[in-house]
Structures are given as structure tokens and as C-alpha cells.
Image (cartoon, rainbow, N blue to C red; front, side):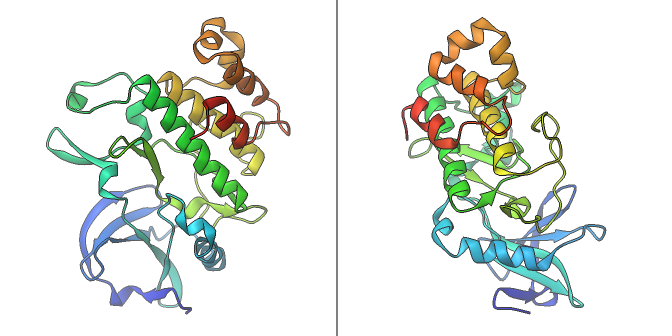
Length: 267
């Protein structure tokens, strides 16, 4: 085992906080602020790729608003999980007596009864949140990292201290041209229809268009194709953003994050 490796037997789980298709996430009693993601027994892990992702986060990308994996967990010689930091407190809120993360989904659906106390962004704040997500993609792509599976459960936001964003559950990230440490399941409604199942910078750019358009329009299902087909959406977005949406449909010629930042007015 390497420098960032720990044995499962040396960890003490304090509370289970989430269950997903790949594994279960626990808080640790002996490491405040650190979470353990323990994979289900049928999930295959590529330990070397997970190690590469951890090494990548040690460099300039370590400052990105991402819950980077920072340790591998082994049991009986097999990699069974990872360690990662917990999302900062400002990316969570209390709704209907429950502590919940401020997931992207709250920005994309009409307000529901249980969200009565949730402060949602103004139009200007939505634009700044969209720009923050674009900046996150710009930084990751500039560091050679592909997001791959984009999910509205794993992209967080906050208005505390000004609009900002954070990404969690990032073991599905990968270095460009390499496989992910854990094969992610593509999230329904967030794929590239031109290249289903692929994960490259180009497919990421289509998904970045989805994130940007959906945040700006407050619509969980709008696509670049919809913008091309519907005049009222083009009017809502304005000429520059509508043009970027149109170009996002074309594989191999999709706008990089810098173009979206320019149209949004930067950060």
C-alpha cells in the first residue's frame, strides 16, 4: 500500500450518511471532516487509476471546489473504498427538519412544498452560479481531467458568501484518455446523444452546455437541441448564449468552457 492508503480495519464509522448504486458513505469517528465511501462488493475498482486521481489532486487542481479522493481503503489486499473530504457546511441546508445537501436539482424544478424555506437564486445569481459551474469545468479540463458522468445530485451550490459551487462523489472523474477508477453509470437525461457511453472532453462540453442552459432557464430537461428549435428559448438566453447552444450540438466543434464564460460575463 502507498502513502495515501489505509486499512479498513483501522477506520471507525460513526454514521452512515448516504447509500448509492456504487457504495455507502460514512462519517468517520476518528477523522472529523473525512468521509469513507465503501463500495458494494460487486463494484470493480482500478486502484492504480484511483491513485492517479489522488496524485492529480495534489497539484494545482487541489484548489478546485471538488471533494477529491484523498486516500484508498484496502481490505485483504483489495481496494474496497476511498476517503474524501465532506462538503463544506455552506453547501447544506435544513429543509422540513432534515439536513440536505444543496444539490443542483433544487435549481432545476419548480418549488415544492418542502422547499418553502429554501432561498433560491435571483436571475443574476443564477447567471453567477452557471458561470461558477463553467469555471469548474474549465479548471478540470485545463488540468487534463474529464468529468464523465454529470449528475444533478453531485453538483452542489450555495448563495452563502456569494454564489459558488462544489462537486462531490468524484471518483468517476478520470484523466483524459484513461479509464475511470470506478466505472460510472451514465445519469439518465445528462448524456451526449451523439456519443452515448463515451467520456471525453468533447462529451463533457455537451454536458457543460446542459448544466449551463438548465441553470439559466431553471429547467431540468432543456437541451441545446431545444434551444435551436424554440425561438422563445433563444430570446430568453440572448444571441451569444443561443449561438453557443447551437454549436454544442456538433461533435468535435463544441465550445470550450472559456466561450461560455465570455458569454456569461466571466466570473
